[in-house]
Image (tube, rainbow, N blue to C red):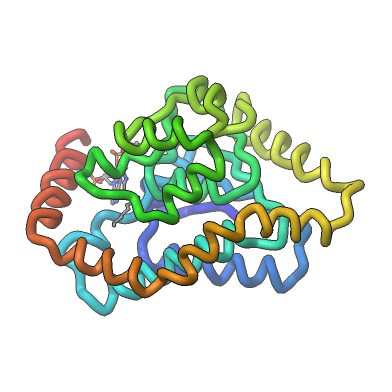
Length: 241
Ligand SMILES: CCCCC/C=C/C(=O)SCCNC(=O)CCNC(=O)[C@H](O)C(C)(C)COP(=O)(O)OP(=O)(O)OC[C@H]1O[C@@H](n2cnc3c(N)ncnc32)[C@H](O)[C@@H]1OP(=O)(O)O
């Protein structure tokens, strides 16, 4: 699955709906595995589209968040094997997508990956945190989340946020295929049940608290202070250009 929403694959409602549909198709056609990557040469995904959260239409932003939750359920909780070929920056929601896969290969270069929400004055939802603690040790996750740490490729490898470094996108995809090939001699049902048991607690936590999580998000986007921070952040991104 190749993300292709220039310039930075920011996750807006339309892209999330497309991803949700594609994940359904992959599950339905009984594919063995999926590799998630990006068509951009330098950005895997810039995370959630901030414009969806800035001065939002309430009905749309509710659908936006619900669709993000669905994409996470379908990706994090998939039966099929998932790997991410991270060929560029992966902040926030981009990091969430990568961590929701079972294996991550990142191309070397001046790229960064991490959950930077606190730097934006945002508290990452529990399920973002759960996804991170499913990937790196709890102590490292707490430190990274509270400090909004963006890891460079070497740091990400060292902490276990990524599993391998690749020379380029083709190499990243080849390495993801190498990971998928490890399951050739492992019975598929035993593999998928094991994966889902490992991920069950995090999945159940969001299933049980799904409405509450949505309400928290809706409150968040309607908070004038948050709107002000988002406005300043958007300006800072634009000034950079
Ligand atoms: C309870 C609530 C929880 C909410 C949880 C939130 C999760 C999130 O994912 S919030 C989004 C966090 N994402 C970021 O902070 C990333 C911001 N972007 C960047 O750091 C960079 O764009 C980059 C490193 C990803 C790529 O850098 P570069 O290639 O230099 O591209 P530009 O910065 O020049 O960006 C081009 C263009 O795209 C706009 N843009 C970038 N990121 C976003 C975004 N996340 N949403 C919307 N738009 C984005 C940027 O403003 C530029 O726009 P123009 O100036 O109009 O071309």
